[in-house]
Length: 178
Image 1 (cartoon, rainbow, N blue to C red):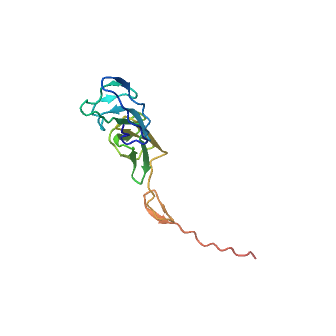
Image 2: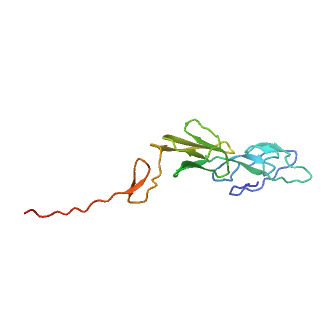
Image 3: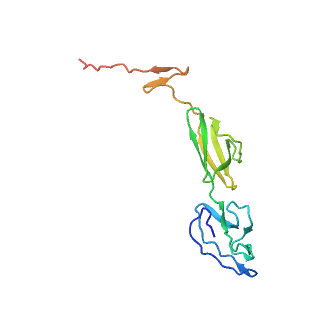
């Protein structure tokens, strides 16, 4: 038995040719993955067997040995974040085995449109991400209003024409009466 990316150990099984036996139950573990069965090839393209399956003559009599590789399915949902910068919002998808599709927009219905940036708009921006195993994740950011970057330096204000100006407070002296 080979953990195929997992951890732990399992002892070999010995079967007499011509007899029926049950495969050992899996004891391997792999963080973020679910065990799905055994296969005669690490990549899963060989002959598949379920956990503790009853088998007969699975090894060629001339070779006498076979290695069964644990098969794993990604069980972690992908994640995403939406960041806000001066001109748009940007989607950052993430997954432990790779993102297969993503998208973003203003609809709460999943849309894997391939967009990773979105122009500002008031309301909620939704981000969607899906991995190769079909697991999905969602992230959102709510924008109260269209964001405008303040282009004026500190201590200056912007007028309605978009021009920066500096406001001074005149010195006022208080004279004693009399």
